[in-house]
Image (cartoon, rainbow, N blue to C red; front, side, top):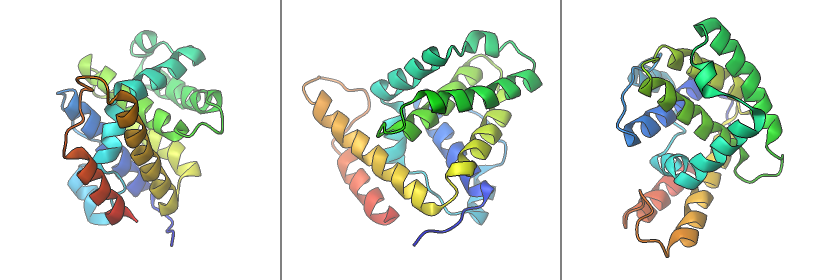
Length: 195
């Protein structure tokens, strides 16, 4: 059964995703709305296995490839006033999504990875105030098309598939950067709990 989500649940999803990626990169932030406050009112749809997919170097590379294809210059963007940067982000999120082919299996994960990477970018450059509108723009944008719980089940399944696919692809490498022997059990537990 699918449920209609409130915008706060989508905000919680993005705040947890961004927190995961920031912590992976040894960065900290103060989310716009404290995560515990949102957790009191919303179901959680973000899981660590999703975060594993978002920080994987192939995911980051692909997310940034699409940034380059739309000509989004993060260096220039971060120098804008907050209002101009917010408007630019709104426009570029639309361009970013339109640029990715519709039947790309991981399309939505690339978008989320881009949002998380952009958040890391601004925190590293001491522009943390930008994270407030990054979260609100991402949540508003995603809410338009992803307002049911079924859509987040879909995202979970895609991240699960991404992790499995990339474990197989990279199993010959000595160090993939974040996989551990316990990761697959955690993924399976998350997957069962989510369904």
